[in-house]
Image (cartoon, rainbow, N blue to C red; front, side, top):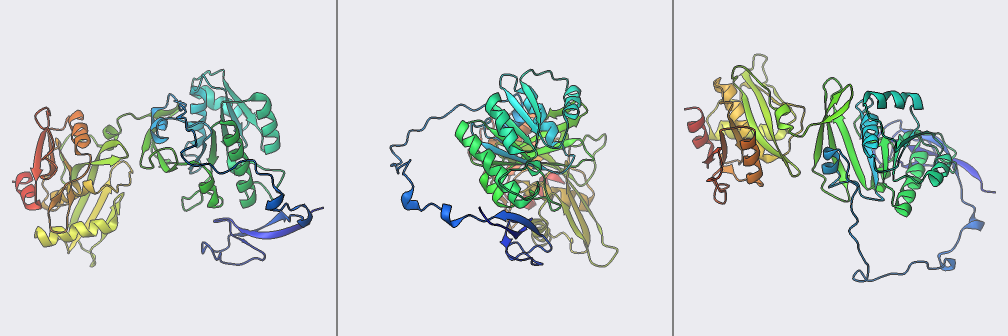
Length: 455
């Protein structure tokens, strides 16, 4: 009989140690080691690699046959975009998010809309009555969505063998428990073992599996880091619980791009897809206000027009403050230095506050020109016309640099009713402006922009 011994596992990264230590040598976190019971392998039952029959043999890559299998398309266009065109058969998808953000609502809504597929929704956190109440609020009456409340993986796989679902949803992986591991549910060993069992099932049967996962206080997925390496796709469901908008972002995707995002709006009847997010990211005002500029950014293949808000005021408390929300603070410091050196603006004695409306985090350098315009607008206390937007990068010499996908950015601005867009002069060479209803204003330097914008 196999001996039973204990070991200590780090709850953050999965590092194991024979004894308890205060600080993890792998990830550096304090007080994360938890004692777990593990089973030591019996050396008598260990099989040498020489005695294993060769079931599969190496093949030349040219001999391997490949068929592009059709994806499962859902009625949720936002999810289809984030996954790269639909659900890949046999894929293992992990969805993480804060408590109460709407992960279970999103997956139940998707399960109810897949009316042509047999969907098994396994819940280890809620009862059947609670799930039924949520489904009633969604006003969906799907006859192919089945609920199973169970936490033991052995019982789940027995039901799966009889039920034979087309799609499997597990809510959540931290509540599942395998009989092969003696530690409690939610431990590093249990999460790793349960994920491995569901991964083996997905790969052998071709059934896509959705795993809902919890996150830690710092926003990362709970459990060992190897969990993210095991799955095919990692999705992050984020947003402010005090607002109605949610963002589904791709962190890892073996079958598509990792720069896509989907935007939802939370209602009492479920999550509504936001097909045109630019309308919610741009505030509606009766009167123009200084410090407001509209910039064009790209998230994957989707162009978004977002609102940049800035406030520049005299520093009354000694050291000037530099604060940014949704925009890189170091890049803000660089743009302020460019304005002071190349534009002659005395911003060194000013407090500067910058905010990206809508709660987005912007990394696209094409937003630089709108940030610069917003800062100067607030500094001079002169508003920018609301029908004007920007799409260009700013260099250290004050030059306006070209950006990619300029046609998509200009088309999105035209679709939303903007009358004028400022771009780099080097972007306008291959741009066909004859068929556009929006005025394209090419600029080469910041001085030229300020002369046209604030004359």
